[in-house]
Amino acid sequence: MKLAQIVSILEETVPALWQEDYDNSGLIVGDPQMDVSKALVCVDVTQSVFDEAVRRNCDLIIAHHPLVFKGLKRLTPGSRTESLVIQAIKKDIAVYALHTNLDNMDKGVSWALGQKIGLKTSQVLVPRKGLLRKLVTFCPVDHAEQVRQALFDAGAGCIGNYDSCSYNLEGTGSFRAGEGSHPFVGETGKTHFENELRIETVYPLHLEHEIVRALLNAHPYEEVAYDLYPLENEYAKVGSGVIGDLESPLDEAEFLDLLKSISGSVVLRHSALLGRHVSKVAICGGSGSFLIREAIARKADVFITADLKYHDFFEAGRKILLADIGHYESEQFAKELIAAILVKKIPTFAVLMTENNTNAVYYH
Image (cartoon, rainbow, N blue to C red; front, side, top):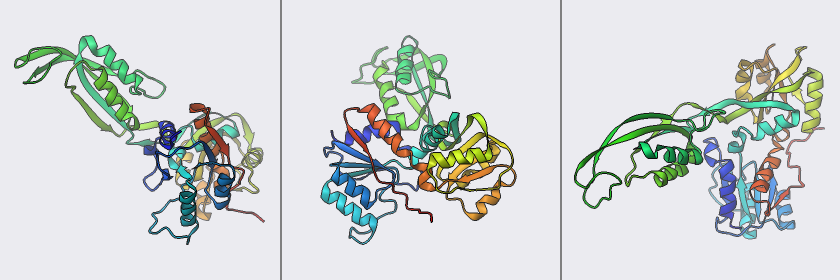
Protein backbone atom coordinates (compact mmCIF):
# COMPACT_ATOMS: atom_id res chain seq x y z
CA MET A 1 0.00 0.00 0.00
CA LYS A 2 1.23 3.49 -0.82
CA LEU A 3 2.14 5.75 2.10
CA ALA A 4 -0.14 8.42 0.62
CA GLN A 5 -3.11 6.09 1.11
CA ILE A 6 -2.28 5.60 4.79
CA VAL A 7 -1.90 9.36 5.26
CA SER A 8 -5.24 9.97 3.54
CA ILE A 9 -7.00 7.46 5.80
CA LEU A 10 -5.51 9.01 8.95
CA GLU A 11 -6.38 12.54 7.90
CA GLU A 12 -9.95 11.64 6.99
CA THR A 13 -10.50 10.91 10.68
CA VAL A 14 -7.99 13.32 12.23
CA PRO A 15 -7.52 16.24 9.81
CA ALA A 16 -4.18 18.03 9.92
CA LEU A 17 -6.20 21.26 9.90
CA TRP A 18 -7.14 20.56 13.55
CA GLN A 19 -3.56 20.90 14.84
CA GLU A 20 -2.38 23.99 16.69
CA ASP A 21 -0.36 26.62 14.85
CA TYR A 22 2.86 25.74 16.71
CA ASP A 23 2.59 22.02 15.96
CA ASN A 24 4.23 19.84 13.31
CA SER A 25 1.79 16.97 12.83
CA GLY A 26 1.68 15.07 9.54
CA LEU A 27 4.23 13.29 7.37
CA ILE A 28 7.69 14.16 8.69
CA VAL A 29 9.94 11.66 6.90
CA GLY A 30 9.10 9.62 3.81
CA ASP A 31 7.98 9.69 0.18
CA PRO A 32 4.17 9.61 -0.16
CA GLN A 33 4.60 7.24 -3.13
CA MET A 34 6.68 4.70 -1.24
CA ASP A 35 5.19 1.29 -0.48
CA VAL A 36 4.50 0.47 3.17
CA SER A 37 3.32 -2.81 4.62
CA LYS A 38 3.62 -2.54 8.41
CA ALA A 39 3.34 0.30 10.92
CA LEU A 40 4.70 0.63 14.45
CA VAL A 41 2.60 2.91 16.68
CA CYS A 42 4.16 4.82 19.59
CA VAL A 43 3.91 7.96 21.70
CA ASP A 44 7.51 9.11 21.08
CA VAL A 45 10.08 8.25 18.43
CA THR A 46 13.16 7.25 20.42
CA GLN A 47 16.22 5.25 19.45
CA SER A 48 14.74 2.15 21.09
CA VAL A 49 11.49 2.59 19.14
CA PHE A 50 13.39 3.03 15.89
CA ASP A 51 15.49 -0.06 16.56
CA GLU A 52 12.26 -1.95 17.28
CA ALA A 53 10.81 -0.80 13.96
CA VAL A 54 13.87 -2.17 12.15
CA ARG A 55 13.78 -5.45 14.10
CA ARG A 56 10.06 -5.98 13.46
CA ASN A 57 10.37 -5.02 9.76
CA CYS A 58 8.15 -1.94 10.00
CA ASP A 59 8.51 0.62 7.21
CA LEU A 60 6.31 3.22 8.92
CA ILE A 61 6.37 4.71 12.42
CA ILE A 62 3.24 6.55 13.53
CA ALA A 63 3.83 8.61 16.67
CA HIS A 64 1.79 10.93 18.82
CA HIS A 65 4.65 13.38 19.40
CA PRO A 66 6.37 14.70 16.23
CA LEU A 67 9.95 13.57 15.74
CA VAL A 68 10.76 17.01 14.29
CA PHE A 69 9.05 19.70 16.32
CA LYS A 70 11.18 22.76 15.57
CA GLY A 71 12.89 23.58 12.31
CA LEU A 72 16.11 21.77 11.41
CA LYS A 73 18.94 23.80 9.91
CA ARG A 74 21.19 20.83 9.15
CA LEU A 75 21.14 17.03 9.04
CA THR A 76 24.17 15.84 10.95
CA PRO A 77 24.27 13.20 13.71
CA GLY A 78 24.57 15.89 16.37
CA SER A 79 21.21 15.78 18.14
CA ARG A 80 18.80 12.93 18.87
CA THR A 81 16.29 14.30 16.34
CA GLU A 82 18.80 14.76 13.53
CA SER A 83 20.32 11.32 14.15
CA LEU A 84 16.92 9.60 14.00
CA VAL A 85 15.90 11.47 10.83
CA ILE A 86 19.12 10.36 9.14
CA GLN A 87 18.54 6.76 10.22
CA ALA A 88 14.95 6.86 8.98
CA ILE A 89 16.05 8.10 5.57
CA LYS A 90 18.82 5.50 5.30
CA LYS A 91 16.52 2.64 6.33
CA ASP A 92 13.64 3.96 4.18
CA ILE A 93 11.30 4.14 7.18
CA ALA A 94 8.59 6.79 7.06
CA VAL A 95 7.62 8.78 10.16
CA TYR A 96 4.20 10.32 10.67
CA ALA A 97 2.76 12.20 13.68
CA LEU A 98 -0.74 12.80 15.04
CA HIS A 99 -0.24 15.31 17.81
CA THR A 100 -2.48 18.27 18.67
CA ASN A 101 -4.96 17.34 15.95
CA LEU A 102 -5.50 14.06 17.84
CA ASP A 103 -5.57 16.02 21.11
CA ASN A 104 -8.26 18.32 19.71
CA MET A 105 -10.57 15.59 18.43
CA ASP A 106 -13.72 15.06 20.51
CA LYS A 107 -12.87 11.37 20.76
CA GLY A 108 -9.15 11.98 20.99
CA VAL A 109 -6.45 11.70 23.63
CA SER A 110 -8.36 13.25 26.55
CA TRP A 111 -11.48 11.25 25.67
CA ALA A 112 -9.46 8.02 25.66
CA LEU A 113 -8.27 8.65 29.22
CA GLY A 114 -11.84 9.47 30.19
CA GLN A 115 -13.00 6.13 28.83
CA LYS A 116 -10.42 4.32 30.94
CA ILE A 117 -11.59 6.21 34.02
CA GLY A 118 -15.21 5.38 33.28
CA LEU A 119 -16.83 8.60 32.08
CA LYS A 120 -20.34 7.72 30.89
CA THR A 121 -20.66 10.93 28.86
CA SER A 122 -18.17 13.51 27.65
CA GLN A 123 -17.92 16.58 25.47
CA VAL A 124 -15.15 18.96 24.41
CA LEU A 125 -14.21 21.28 27.27
CA VAL A 126 -13.30 24.31 25.11
CA PRO A 127 -14.51 24.00 21.50
CA ARG A 128 -12.46 25.64 18.74
CA LYS A 129 -13.71 28.54 16.62
CA GLY A 130 -12.94 29.27 12.98
CA LEU A 131 -13.35 25.69 11.76
CA LEU A 132 -16.88 26.06 10.37
CA ARG A 133 -18.08 27.62 7.11
CA LYS A 134 -21.44 28.40 5.57
CA LEU A 135 -22.29 27.56 1.97
CA VAL A 136 -25.02 29.43 0.11
CA THR A 137 -26.14 28.31 -3.33
CA PHE A 138 -29.08 28.83 -5.69
CA CYS A 139 -30.75 26.21 -7.86
CA PRO A 140 -34.04 25.50 -9.65
CA VAL A 141 -36.75 24.49 -7.17
CA ASP A 142 -37.26 21.12 -8.86
CA HIS A 143 -33.59 20.21 -8.29
CA ALA A 144 -33.23 21.48 -4.74
CA GLU A 145 -33.69 18.10 -3.10
CA GLN A 146 -30.89 16.41 -5.06
CA VAL A 147 -28.53 19.32 -4.40
CA ARG A 148 -29.31 19.36 -0.67
CA GLN A 149 -28.85 15.60 -0.38
CA ALA A 150 -25.51 15.73 -2.19
CA LEU A 151 -24.30 18.39 0.26
CA PHE A 152 -25.51 16.37 3.25
CA ASP A 153 -23.90 13.18 1.94
CA ALA A 154 -20.59 15.04 1.62
CA GLY A 155 -20.73 16.10 5.28
CA ALA A 156 -22.58 19.42 5.32
CA GLY A 157 -25.59 20.28 7.45
CA CYS A 158 -24.52 18.90 10.85
CA ILE A 159 -25.18 21.01 13.95
CA GLY A 160 -24.59 19.23 17.26
CA ASN A 161 -26.65 16.04 17.29
CA TYR A 162 -28.71 17.15 14.28
CA ASP A 163 -27.98 16.49 10.62
CA SER A 164 -29.55 17.47 7.28
CA CYS A 165 -29.74 21.07 8.54
CA SER A 166 -30.37 23.79 5.95
CA TYR A 167 -32.30 27.01 5.40
CA ASN A 168 -34.28 27.39 2.18
CA LEU A 169 -35.79 30.54 0.69
CA GLU A 170 -37.64 30.75 -2.62
CA GLY A 171 -36.97 33.62 -5.02
CA THR A 172 -36.26 34.55 -8.61
CA GLY A 173 -32.86 34.34 -10.25
CA SER A 174 -31.87 35.99 -13.52
CA PHE A 175 -29.09 35.36 -16.03
CA ARG A 176 -28.24 35.70 -19.71
CA ALA A 177 -26.26 32.94 -21.37
CA GLY A 178 -23.39 34.18 -23.49
CA GLU A 179 -21.86 32.88 -26.69
CA GLY A 180 -20.47 29.36 -26.39
CA SER A 181 -22.58 28.54 -23.33
CA HIS A 182 -25.00 25.62 -22.99
CA PRO A 183 -27.68 26.81 -20.58
CA PHE A 184 -29.73 24.26 -18.66
CA VAL A 185 -32.75 26.57 -18.96
CA GLY A 186 -33.32 29.69 -21.08
CA GLU A 187 -31.81 30.64 -24.44
CA THR A 188 -28.41 31.96 -25.41
CA GLY A 189 -28.38 35.73 -25.65
CA LYS A 190 -31.70 36.23 -23.84
CA THR A 191 -32.21 37.23 -20.23
CA HIS A 192 -33.95 34.42 -18.37
CA PHE A 193 -35.81 34.49 -15.04
CA GLU A 194 -35.96 31.23 -13.09
CA ASN A 195 -37.85 30.25 -9.94
CA GLU A 196 -34.98 29.22 -7.65
CA LEU A 197 -34.31 28.15 -4.07
CA ARG A 198 -31.59 29.73 -1.97
CA ILE A 199 -30.03 26.93 0.10
CA GLU A 200 -27.86 27.70 3.13
CA THR A 201 -26.00 25.07 5.14
CA VAL A 202 -22.97 24.83 7.44
CA TYR A 203 -20.00 22.50 7.09
CA PRO A 204 -16.62 21.81 8.74
CA LEU A 205 -13.74 23.50 6.93
CA HIS A 206 -11.73 20.31 6.45
CA LEU A 207 -14.52 18.94 4.20
CA GLU A 208 -14.75 22.04 2.00
CA HIS A 209 -13.18 20.50 -1.10
CA GLU A 210 -15.45 17.45 -1.03
CA ILE A 211 -18.57 19.54 -0.36
CA VAL A 212 -17.93 22.01 -3.18
CA ARG A 213 -17.21 19.11 -5.53
CA ALA A 214 -20.48 17.44 -4.49
CA LEU A 215 -22.35 20.69 -5.15
CA LEU A 216 -20.87 21.09 -8.63
CA ASN A 217 -21.63 17.46 -9.52
CA ALA A 218 -25.24 17.58 -8.32
CA HIS A 219 -26.21 21.03 -9.58
CA PRO A 220 -27.89 21.17 -13.00
CA TYR A 221 -26.45 24.53 -14.06
CA GLU A 222 -23.41 24.84 -16.30
CA GLU A 223 -22.10 27.65 -14.06
CA VAL A 224 -23.00 27.19 -10.40
CA ALA A 225 -23.46 30.26 -8.22
CA TYR A 226 -22.34 29.71 -4.63
CA ASP A 227 -20.83 31.67 -1.74
CA LEU A 228 -18.59 30.46 1.11
CA TYR A 229 -18.65 32.37 4.39
CA PRO A 230 -16.26 32.00 7.36
CA LEU A 231 -18.03 31.52 10.71
CA GLU A 232 -16.93 32.22 14.27
CA ASN A 233 -19.30 29.61 15.71
CA GLU A 234 -17.77 27.02 18.02
CA TYR A 235 -17.20 23.58 16.49
CA ALA A 236 -18.33 21.22 19.23
CA LYS A 237 -16.39 18.24 17.85
CA VAL A 238 -12.96 19.90 18.00
CA GLY A 239 -11.18 21.64 20.86
CA SER A 240 -9.15 21.38 24.03
CA GLY A 241 -9.85 18.81 26.73
CA VAL A 242 -13.06 16.99 27.60
CA ILE A 243 -15.54 17.10 30.46
CA GLY A 244 -17.93 14.38 31.53
CA ASP A 245 -19.63 12.50 34.35
CA LEU A 246 -18.72 9.33 36.17
CA GLU A 247 -21.26 6.52 36.32
CA SER A 248 -21.26 6.85 40.12
CA PRO A 249 -19.62 9.48 42.36
CA LEU A 250 -16.40 8.49 44.12
CA ASP A 251 -14.64 9.70 47.22
CA GLU A 252 -11.65 11.93 46.30
CA ALA A 253 -9.04 9.56 47.72
CA GLU A 254 -10.74 6.60 46.06
CA PHE A 255 -10.81 8.46 42.76
CA LEU A 256 -7.10 9.33 42.97
CA ASP A 257 -6.29 5.68 43.68
CA LEU A 258 -8.31 4.69 40.60
CA LEU A 259 -6.52 7.32 38.52
CA LYS A 260 -3.13 6.14 39.73
CA SER A 261 -3.96 2.53 38.88
CA ILE A 262 -5.28 3.29 35.39
CA SER A 263 -2.48 5.65 34.40
CA GLY A 264 0.29 3.52 35.89
CA SER A 265 1.64 6.60 37.66
CA VAL A 266 4.12 5.87 40.42
CA VAL A 267 3.02 9.04 42.20
CA LEU A 268 0.36 11.70 41.64
CA ARG A 269 0.74 15.38 42.36
CA HIS A 270 -2.51 17.02 43.38
CA SER A 271 -3.95 20.06 45.10
CA ALA A 272 -5.55 19.92 48.55
CA LEU A 273 -8.39 17.44 49.01
CA LEU A 274 -11.72 19.22 49.45
CA GLY A 275 -13.67 16.54 51.29
CA ARG A 276 -16.13 16.16 48.41
CA HIS A 277 -17.21 13.40 46.09
CA VAL A 278 -15.98 13.37 42.49
CA SER A 279 -18.70 13.21 39.86
CA LYS A 280 -17.89 15.69 37.05
CA VAL A 281 -14.41 15.23 35.61
CA ALA A 282 -12.42 17.50 33.27
CA ILE A 283 -9.39 16.11 31.43
CA CYS A 284 -6.63 17.47 29.23
CA GLY A 285 -3.98 15.01 28.11
CA GLY A 286 -0.53 16.57 28.13
CA SER A 287 0.14 20.13 29.34
CA GLY A 288 -3.25 21.55 30.30
CA SER A 289 -2.70 24.31 32.85
CA PHE A 290 -4.31 26.81 30.45
CA LEU A 291 -7.65 25.05 31.01
CA ILE A 292 -7.80 25.22 34.81
CA ARG A 293 -10.13 28.22 34.91
CA GLU A 294 -12.40 26.74 32.26
CA ALA A 295 -12.64 23.48 34.22
CA ILE A 296 -13.65 25.51 37.28
CA ALA A 297 -16.18 27.51 35.27
CA ARG A 298 -17.73 24.27 33.98
CA LYS A 299 -18.17 23.08 37.60
CA ALA A 300 -15.79 20.12 37.33
CA ASP A 301 -14.96 18.42 40.63
CA VAL A 302 -11.51 17.42 39.41
CA PHE A 303 -9.22 18.42 36.55
CA ILE A 304 -6.76 15.78 35.33
CA THR A 305 -3.77 16.92 33.29
CA ALA A 306 0.04 17.07 33.39
CA ASP A 307 3.04 19.41 33.65
CA LEU A 308 1.46 21.68 36.28
CA LYS A 309 3.85 24.21 37.81
CA TYR A 310 3.98 25.05 41.49
CA HIS A 311 1.92 28.22 41.13
CA ASP A 312 -0.70 26.45 38.99
CA PHE A 313 -1.85 24.55 42.05
CA PHE A 314 -2.85 27.82 43.74
CA GLU A 315 -5.43 28.27 40.94
CA ALA A 316 -7.45 25.44 42.48
CA GLY A 317 -8.35 27.39 45.63
CA ARG A 318 -11.26 25.57 47.24
CA LYS A 319 -13.02 25.26 43.89
CA ILE A 320 -11.54 22.17 42.27
CA LEU A 321 -9.16 19.25 42.81
CA LEU A 322 -6.19 19.36 40.42
CA ALA A 323 -4.45 16.08 39.58
CA ASP A 324 -1.16 15.98 37.68
CA ILE A 325 -0.62 12.39 36.53
CA GLY A 326 2.39 12.97 34.27
CA HIS A 327 2.69 13.82 30.58
CA TYR A 328 3.31 10.34 29.18
CA GLU A 329 0.81 8.82 31.58
CA SER A 330 -1.95 11.16 30.37
CA GLU A 331 -1.27 10.54 26.67
CA GLN A 332 -0.25 6.88 26.55
CA PHE A 333 -3.63 5.74 25.23
CA ALA A 334 -3.03 7.73 22.02
CA LYS A 335 -1.39 4.55 20.71
CA GLU A 336 -4.67 2.67 20.98
CA LEU A 337 -6.57 5.47 19.22
CA ILE A 338 -4.15 5.55 16.28
CA ALA A 339 -4.12 1.77 15.91
CA ALA A 340 -7.94 1.62 16.07
CA ILE A 341 -8.28 4.12 13.21
CA LEU A 342 -6.09 2.05 10.91
CA VAL A 343 -7.53 -1.33 11.90
CA LYS A 344 -11.07 -0.09 11.30
CA LYS A 345 -10.31 1.47 7.90
CA ILE A 346 -7.84 -1.11 6.57
CA PRO A 347 -8.06 -4.35 8.59
CA THR A 348 -5.58 -6.11 6.27
CA PHE A 349 -2.78 -3.60 7.05
CA ALA A 350 -0.35 -4.73 9.77
CA VAL A 351 -0.42 -2.38 12.78
CA LEU A 352 1.89 -3.10 15.73
CA MET A 353 1.99 -1.40 19.12
CA THR A 354 5.45 -0.56 20.38
CA GLU A 355 6.86 -2.73 23.15
CA ASN A 356 8.79 0.29 24.49
CA ASN A 357 7.65 2.57 27.29
CA THR A 358 9.05 5.90 26.10
CA ASN A 359 8.32 7.86 29.27
CA ALA A 360 11.37 10.08 29.84
CA VAL A 361 10.48 10.81 33.49
CA TYR A 362 11.55 8.41 36.25
CA TYR A 363 10.77 8.38 39.97
CA HIS A 364 13.08 7.24 42.77
